Length: 226
Length: 84
View 1 (cartoon, rainbow over the protein chains, first blue to last red):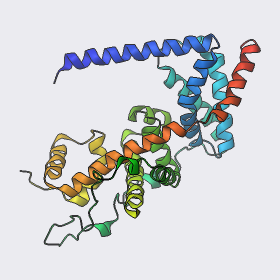
View 2 (view 1 turned 135 degrees about the vertical axis):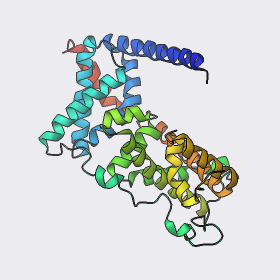
View 3 (view 1 turned 180 degrees about the horizontal axis):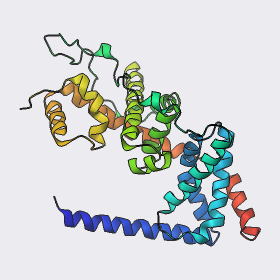
View 4 (view 1 turned 180 degrees about the vertical axis):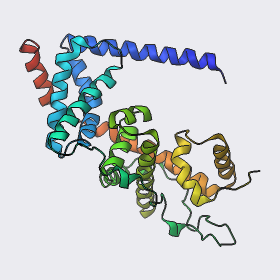
């Protein structure tokens, strides 16, 4: 509606991001511990997740991530800022992980993706809805969700709830787990996830939908158990 | 208002596309129309938003200081070693 304002904001944001990248790149070039530690904290968990999609086991994923950090440190002098630092680092990672995965005969990263994006896995169990013929409301709620508006904040944010989310995510199939973790834990954009995992936007959304739906169900069960 | 109303069971499958702003305009209008008149689906959408926020809380506990230390050590080694 306000294209000019939007453009100004976007430009300001892009400039802020570029300035932040310059600070990080300068820090890495200078061998600044604090900058490196900051990047580790910010990206290391996501790097493990992404690597894990291309290689067979966690130990190999950890090796790939360590090799990537070394390659980043060795190559940072040649980084020209044509992409963001993050994109550049994760491209190095996926290239290495793919090479490694190929060597270990898991070169198709989303071998399970086909199955994971197929229809037929409802967000909410169908027994919670009325039938198509029900005169009250066809396909309406039979067992509706209860509002969480009255659930106290302390209960929502309790250790038990957060642990329950962690377990629900751990139980997800690989691709769903990776996508929800990158999006909702690491705070990545949809485009960043598609780029790093080499999947389409539509697939990304299907995986995210399945994952979030299951995590919500787990939260609902946990909060109603109390 | 809309030719074909959205059922609750259909709506829950569109929630992610809605939150991702990936619904075509007519479908978004049907979604908004349904939500406006359905407290259960309103609760569902709110639950989904809360779930996303709570999932974000896992971020803080991800990388414990002890798991950073070996990687920082490798960094110091690399720096001492004359930068590859």
